[in-house]
Image (cartoon, rainbow, N blue to C red; front, side, top):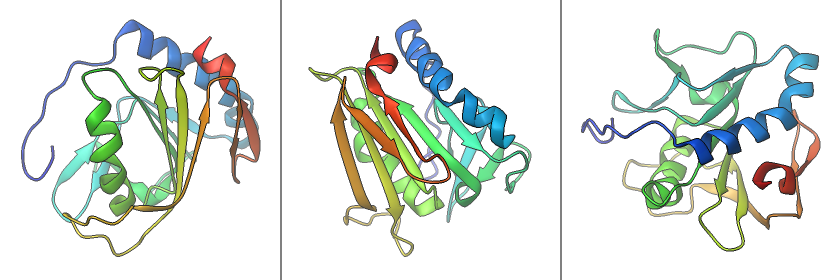
Length: 168
């Protein structure tokens, strides 16, 4: 749902699913140690409308704050991940950062295997007063690394991701 429109897209392809699985493998020790949850079919509520986005991977505490039975409040997520494909790349880069920042998602990770070389971009510190049509950069901090370079995830993760393992 976006701006009151229903948008239906195919679930991820095998390549994207493998990328999410590789990333989940890297995060799994933290998930177990902290009692976190991984979600792939739960939505983030995007205020002020009834819009929502279903990320490719979402990491939350054991008991995140729910908007309703199918949506969580973005501010109760720990990390939201989108894996780009040729068909989703523009939306992942240009629409979702604003939506996720408006929802209060603290960390938005874009995994982009479509670029050459592949990249991972972490957006953090969302601006709180964003409008639906805001043109400002929705996150104050943006860090992009190429495949093979480490990507530091801030607390509560406090780890450097081996990006070569994600794209391998």
